[in-house]
Image (cartoon, rainbow, N blue to C red):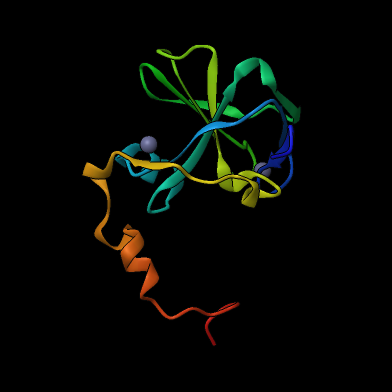
Amino acid sequence: MSSILHGGCLCGAVHYRVHGQPFHVTHCHCVSCRKASGAAFVTWFTVRLIELEWLGEKPLFYHSSTAALRGFCPHCGATLSYQHESDPDDIDLTAASLDMPDVLVPEFHIWWQDHISWGEPQQQAVLPVHARSRD
Ligand SMILES: [Zn+2]
Ligand SMILES: [Zn+2]
């Protein structure tokens, strides 16, 4: 895996560079991630806070609970980061905001108790696949 990863938001105003090794590549199915992103689940990877460099504009941060801070682009709203005060030295970044997300390999699902039934991997596997949009 590359030791430097690049990523950013949809509009490109906020982007970032990560030095160091990502860990805890995780699909999170919690209600909070779903509501923040509008997606069935969010895939995160964790890095040391000191290994993350925000480039361009800084994200805005929203306290989704008293202990949790979610970073997003102030222009396009893209979900970018998650920090919890119980892990002050770490930050989670959205794996899908990476420029080359295929370098990561998800390791597990968390908050499965909150998962949407149609968000299950088995459900995904049986659906018809279209290379681009369905016409
Ligand atoms: Zn943006
Ligand atoms: Zn979550």
